[in-house]
Length: 117
Image 1 (cartoon, rainbow, N blue to C red):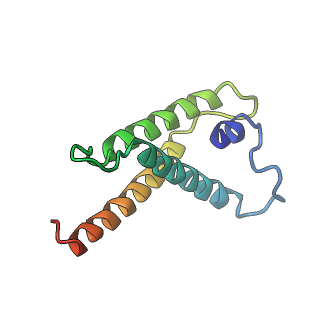
Image 2 (image 1 turned 135 degrees about the vertical axis):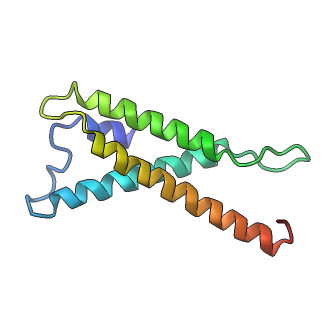
């Protein structure tokens, strides 16, 4: 919901005073919001417990998050004052990979301490 809301604004950073850091803040926002989305998708898709528990859905989480990023950029084409920018997809992808990579490293470390490899 937050991603859609800010994407539908002509100037999503309008609440900030104009500065030379606006471009950097925009990049950080892209990475952060898609890292959070990937993390939430991962948590929603991961099944726990039982003898038939399903392994973590890293690729499914990544694909859904990236598909939303693509749709979000297309959505911005229809917002006055906004346009589709492929570079933004790159920053979105960085956030997705960073979040899922950190989860993967944490779970791998957890498995090693439990004696699973």
